[in-house]
Amino acid sequence: MAAVILVAGLVPFDSGKTWFTLGAALAARERGLRVGVFKPVAAHNLWYSPRAVRRSLELKLLVGNDVLLYHEKGLVEDIGVSNPVAVATAPPDPSAYASVGDYMRDFEDVGRIAVLSRVYAFDERAHSHYVHAENLRKMSARVRRLVEKMGSALGAAPRSFAGLSAYLTSNEVAANLDKCLRELERGRDLVFVESFNDAVAPYGALLESVDAAVIVAPGKAYVYLDARKLREVSRKAFERWGWAGFRTSYVFDSLKPDFSVETGFAAKPSARKPHREFIDKIASLVAPSKRSSPE
Image (cartoon, rainbow, N blue to C red):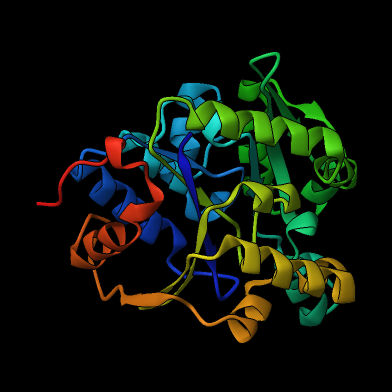
């Protein structure tokens, strides 16, 4: 059975989760380990993702920048299994609002600017695409045309994002995501699971499968090797504050990390010294018979 390493961000945006995960996964592969990457829920903004738009049209599959990067590095083979839920947002048109405050409120709320989504059903090995028309009225004409073009190419069916959100928090979806994770664990030594924003985990049930966790902030990664303590802190925060408490800040304030690594600056994601140091320090999580000797 593979060791499952959770990677979450300390801040909602640009923590460096993807670059850390990719660097660590490549470093593990250098050590001869069999590695998989799982990003259960991924969101990207079409406006900032022209390459992802082009590749989505080519693949006939909604896919974002991060998953494409993993795919190109050979860390993701089956996009559906590694990324069962994908959401595309688009920037609203400021002139469609009565105030800048209303505009900013929507801009910062994924549910108000989500325009396309994809859900992968593991048992059926099938993707379903959706278009969220209720949000298109707030977009510029050019953005609407792009979304309509993509929706047509992907065979997207109309669905409210509220309805999709309710579905995504159901036990059915959690079971589906677990099946994807189990599939990724087969024949692998390590599976990295990337969370979204500053959520402790991409879905609550995942914590039961985690062997260790990394909380990434710009420039530094904090490593927690006691998954039991992580689960306990997260459970208490959730019981007190609900989903608002399911954030890494509560873990960070409550638990002392076992160690940390400086991630430093990089022009592009790659396996560097901090990632190799991290892999060497967590090597005990992987069965000795599956490990190769460090270089």
